[in-house]
Length: 91
Length: 480
Image (cartoon, rainbow over all chains, first blue to last red; front, side, top):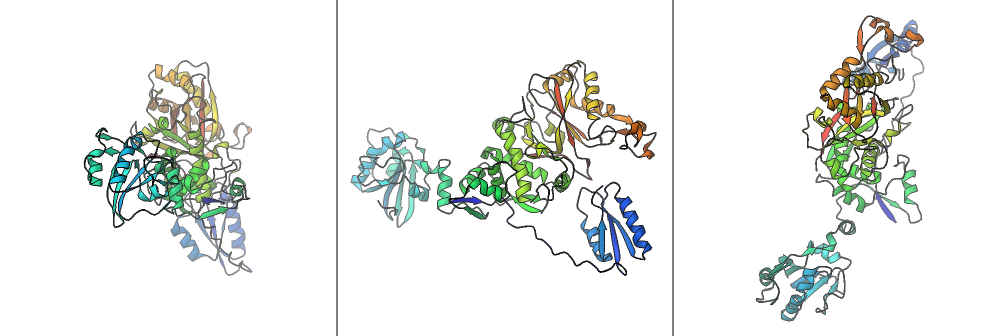
């Protein structure tokens, strides 16, 4: 028998259960997060328009750079202010 | 034969392969008749012939438990405790330990001993594993006798696609002998899962990559560099662009470990170049959990994501080494990491003046990513000896060349506007009338490497997120 040393972190990344999707958006606040990718704003502007037309409250956020994860204060702010968040992941 | 170390009396550890042991064998016989002595023999159970009660320690268990480093070693035990020991043959010391005067008449006063077999490389690691003294914390993974260990490692997802060396405890211990750093030391949090990267875990991955122990300090410095937040390893991994860490090694370590800075420096065939870069990639994969088509979202990637590591040819260069651009003095070993990809050749076999060659190089530099994208990225230019000679003969310093290239990479924005030339890609029309530069002011690096023949330099392009908001090149000193 050969004994090897584990080269990994020895922990599968903790997989979190997804939150249940809301039945409808009416009455909820939706966050739109621009991750600073080119043309992400075009997509999010259109969503903003459509959601606002339906009377849904929309709040806009922006990450300072696409290259790094969102700063903790921004993540916390979004968590406190909205019920769900939509972000554009690609340009 | 007894494997119990006597509680009281004299013991000695010897091997036939040691001339001093052979010299001292008659003295051991003298002590045997005067007081009695237990002699352990490391290599040949028939040695020393003069001692009837010699004990076979060719398994080296007793030698290991006694902590023998040199043979012959003479030890006096009293009530189970080591109360005195001496190494080699030294009459005065042997008289002191044994309590008998005038032993070894006719022998020289002293002779140095030889290295003990139990501390030879390969043996010491086996003995530490046998006696549970490795001090290694990592989980042990048992591979069954009928299982192919190479296939088992592929199946566990530990490989970059090529076979990896099985990281046995013995190999990892030997790897760790290449550094004085504590295996438990954490060099940083490894993206994407932000796992503490310990020296031990990095050593395991260095074994798998095929490194020798003496490469480990370079691997550790490179890992420290990629885990510096300024390098943004998470973004470099997660981007859809081509990039991965490119490693450039400077200083005496290059020659000590036999790295290639000359012909085919960026190509295959040199173990240090190949395995150091591979080890860094395996660290991100295995420790950080960064795998292609998972968090690594590269559209194409590039072959350098298996390994991308080379040395600068400092000896042949008229320029200061790359590491000095980061404040590390010449003569100090260092690794610079750059988020780069591939190699775009600069072919110029006719320029004989620095002005012509610089223009030629700038033309190639301006094509990176897309001729209409300004600014594009940071870039590293690898200048070959025959091109460097042209600048050397004209007295152009590296700073001068960088300045000239930066000026030559400045362009009026108008022909670069989106839609111009029938190409939708390009600059925002608001930029019309302005001047733009292909690179940020600190965005170009120059390294000299390559074979003596051929007017072929190269450009290593970078990530479209250069600078403090994206990835900065990072340099770290190599510590022993």
